[in-house]
Structures are given as structure tokens and as C-alpha cells.
Length: 93
Image 1 (cartoon, one colour):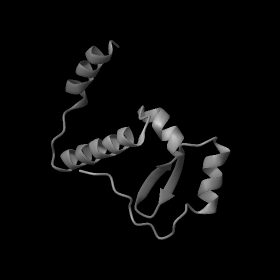
Image 2 (spheres, rainbow, N blue to C red):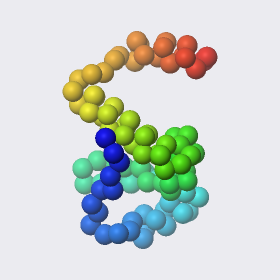
Image 3 (cartoon, rainbow, N blue to C red):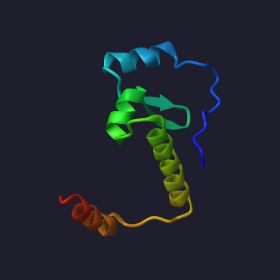
């Protein structure tokens, strides 16, 4: 599954959203939308938060997120009580 650019109504963020991101030194900034709430940040901030250094890492992380969302929609989830001990063991927490 390759990462794709989504079609947008314009080529750029609305100026007030971009200004909010810049005021926070790159975000993340919560942005309400008609169908839910969103988070906007600069690519540099996203890469730092997600630990993706180059374009290939970024594409792989986006693909992994898409797969995870598809799995959740299909009901392929686990209760937090099951996954939390695994994550704690894996990360030594």
C-alpha cells in the first residue's frame, strides 16, 4: 500500500490554521472540522514524534497507520487490559 497525496480543495492550508501551527512552533494544533477533530503539525514535528527520518520511513508509517485503521474498522482490536502488559514488557516500563 503506497502513500498517496489526498486531493485537497486548495494547495495550501487555510492561513489561520497555518498561523496557529507557526505560533506553536510547528504544532501539533487541534483543529475542529465538520466531521470530527483533527491535528495539524509541520512535517518536521510529525517526523520527530513518529520517529521517521526520511521519506521512506514516513511512507511506511502512513501505510502502517492505514492498515491499523482498516483492522480497527474490521473489529480486529484487543482490549487495553491485554495489550498494555505486552507493551510494558516490550518497552521495559
